[in-house]
Image (tube, rainbow, N blue to C red):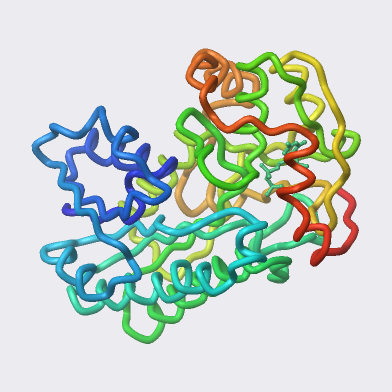
Length: 332
Ligand code: UDP
């Protein structure tokens, strides 16, 4: 099959591309290279079944041209991070909502059969239920979460109205090598590994007892491949590791000094996916456990030396809008 992967030069996308090529699919990547990097695609650049288009999903005309001959789509292109989404909500709307509309419209016009959308577990906000099932109410807490959720709604709606087969995968805290470190403060792995590589203290938020459903990127990529190869339609599925791990546990595995920074308002004390549905519908199971995943990241610790380095002062500056605009409490 010819599969178009938007955001294919990004962190998750580049693993999806590798796995699709390994399964003998033809892959066309669309990426504007703002968040993504060609270096992520180094291993596949010369593959005869691989094509790259430097195209922005906000540019509907160019995007349409990239869809010729495409059977299936995996839509990962988007912008992440909480603080910039609070400060520049229009940019998030333009890329994550209007950009998604452009992708599904291009898919419809090109007669694409199936689309798999990278949705976000941030749609659950601070959930009432753990592990959190897909039926939990959507309560986005900040513009990034809202725009990813609106994208999911668009994809589902296009599925119902135009007969596209759609699957949305709600991703929980994806981590692994190539995790994005450019740009805004966020994604704890990038922050901690840069600190570790430079012999600086790890900036633990609050008391570090909060936990996340950290899910290894290769497992997540495999969920995309299985979803696009499936015959599911109109599905929304959580993708999680089957557990949740505290920041203190992560610190123990990484090792080193710690410094505490204030707990941020509006963030859940726990994220933990109920993964029964994806196991049942796709037969997908996570394969890499947390200790193993962290060990794999530590194996390339030297690569993190040049990544942006955060300390309590720069974190305080970077999270000002967060403290100003968000509020709320949660418990696991
Ligand atoms: N975190 C931390 N120190 C940091 C950045 C994050 O202790 O410098 C914690 C944060 O409180 C959260 C977890 O790491 O519990 C994951 O944060 P991230 O921003 O990666 O993801 P999200 O909060 O969106 O789930």
